[in-house]
Amino acid sequence: MVLSESADLPAIMGGSPIFPGGLPVARPSVPDAGRVTADIQRILESGMLTNGPYVRELEARAADYLGVRHCVAVASCTAGLMLVLRASDLTGDVVIPSFTFAATAHAVAWNGLRPVFADVDRESLTLSASEAARAAGVRTSAILATHTFGTPCDVEGLTQAARAAGVRLFFDAAHAFGTRRDGVSAGGWGDAEVFSLTPTKLVVAGEGGIIATNDDLLAERCRIGRDYANPGDYDCLFVGLNARMSEFHAAIGLASLEGLEARVGSRNEIARAYRDGLGQIPGITFPRVCDQDRSTFKDFVILVEPESFGMDAIKLGLALKAEGIDTRRYYTPPIHRMKAYRGLNGHRLPATEWAADRVLTLPLWSEMSAADQRGVTSAIHRIQRTAQTGR
Image 1 (tube, rainbow, N blue to C red):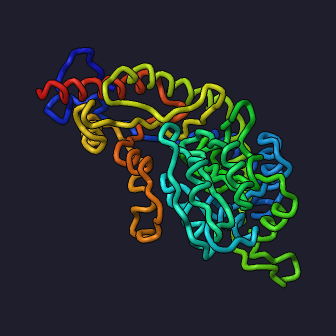
Image 2 (cartoon, rainbow, N blue to C red):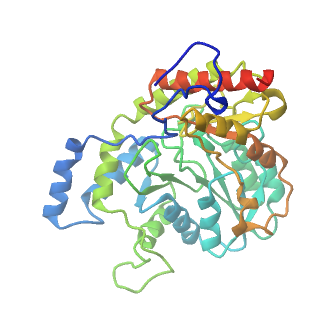
């Protein structure tokens, strides 16, 4: 990294890039090869490549960490969401946020259910309980909320909304392995929560997901459902799918569970440094995490107000690209703007539209150095100075 304290021009205007070799937006925290080599060898020698002891151990360890009765390991978080909805025998509509990853809606649509988009809370960017209640109608059978960026939802408000409407409550917890609300771990809220173990997450299995629930019947149906809903006699109970997790992925996931708390702590430290370094810049704000809650900061997001900052989020992303800094815009377009879902939205989503127009995701990973974090902060400062002065 080349970092100058001088107020030189941003790279997009001819200055030297701060990261000439490039800085990615994320890097996976993978276990050391030596940690899993022996496990992989044992799996190969056993001939048990799926539905074996490593999957069962991962389920038990995950359930212990999350504080739930049941964890069901699956091939992906998306498959887990599909299974949970299918195993719950839902019909009609499912209320979801539009400001989320497309898989939240895909799981609903693949089950033949209709996504109904409700607005997010403008401060936290998670599903608004009052808007979810407003969107629920006579056809609604469930609410599916997302712990966006690892920030816990308004669990209490959503629980009340689901009970008042007489519907099921699920959480897309893809980002939330390690999330806490008022000291309580994600995993046991609602009827079920589904976590992701893909490379950008805090627990990595390569690919995979975990269904967490305290509902005995739902857990059993998900276990059967991940194997085509075949209970063992090939007389399938319902339309399941192949969502089994391999033993190889489970072995990596088990190794990745070690050090999770340290990774969550590291990400929170980096997030605090970003907030301290960027918080005084006009036009930059952050999604709110309540003091009593803990986010995993799977992503670190800023909201860019064009008039105050001097440029919009798109132009800031381009300016950071010139500095060698990779960014993303989670989540734009929001799902209701996507080609696959146009025409479904029946509610105004002003907070979703506001956030989608301003959001920018900065680099953050568990082993990110303080120097790299300061470099990103320095780049934004010098870009903003130029934007304000017009130089």
